[in-house]
Length: 142
Image (tube, rainbow, N blue to C red; front, side, top):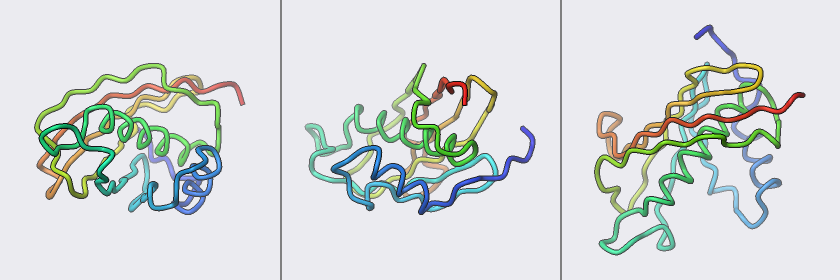
């Protein structure tokens, strides 16, 4: 992929997410790094995210992967609120313990109509991947 430069800062993304998804506080969108084709999102575990056994639920992990994919796309094309998920495949590799975990979103392809993102969830160390997702977004005409 060619060197894309982000168009939005972490603060601009947080502002958009808080406006577009009311009821969430700024801490729900902890974008810790944005660079060419890449975004890292930190997630703090909350009680509502847990499933029996005290691990982060699958639907929560899928939502985090989707949010990271949406954020990395918007960071590189600007605010396009009606970009929508058209496909999301998720592989759960190991349990995610009830503490901070990260989502690394890497653009695979950014086209005019579709964007595909690889998202890896990890905990403690980047090499400890707990889940992997491939997410495709449909981008409306702008």
